[in-house]
Length: 403
Image 1 (tube, rainbow, N blue to C red):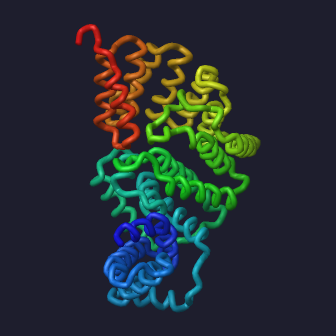
Image 2 (spheres, rainbow, N blue to C red):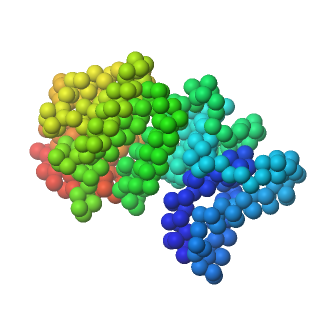
């Protein structure tokens, strides 16, 4: 029964939490009440079996638990009167999710708090998963989440879809968390599974909702285009036995051309507004990969230029690491290695820094150093498919001349 409950929560937790948070206007209360309902479900479902509508059961029980908590609190009377005035009318699930996304990205929160809170509350990522995305410790991330929820409560920030004139202050972070959610689904930080289709679906659904809400906002269109370009190669990323296939080795004849066409149309719409942004640049890079007939024929000079512009717009060591991959094909491995080495301090705890550096060292014939870099990447990697790829690379590595 525990497994059944886990499956229900994986599918429905974001929708349930969003509805509770919007109804009660308190994210912390919504989380606590949903957890209370889950605890009760562990006992009730074991004895009576799974209810016909598990999500509805959890929602009804969580609402009752929330009202019980408010009755016990001295300050809950006003909240209960407000709820009575609202009646039992429930918002649309899509509106609930958007309302919670925008509340989590309120300007009263720091950028780090906004992103972490949205990933946790809206998308259901665990604290360790979010910590891995931020390259911080789980304890640091947990403290950040506590402070964010306290701010929402103390400042009585409403959980609602803001008016259009309020979008600007929050949109950047909303788009960021949707893309981070996609990335976590695309290649999970979990040690158990290589990818999470539920998070990919959630990010696509949120991106589609944002396009419906803001159909002329170029960065919204570009984010959806970027996701579509990535999805075009979804069927070629893993072998039948679950091994990761690098972009350079994927069978491009199997890429989904409808997804490429959709991404291209969305990107063209975005660029027609002549207001460049980071997601437009990232989508343009993804488009060049998606439309190249082969890895060797990829337009590396253009990709390198786009990464340079992206770094000018949003400076980031990860952007510069990605640019170094293009540098390898434009100016050679030695120049690429120099660019990577410049980011060593900032990216010392990032697995892809060490894996990329290993490739450049290998190109230059520094076999022993390449193996040491791959070993460091393996020590930092948690995704099982990535670990398998790095392990196979190390097993196939011939010894260096001084080994």
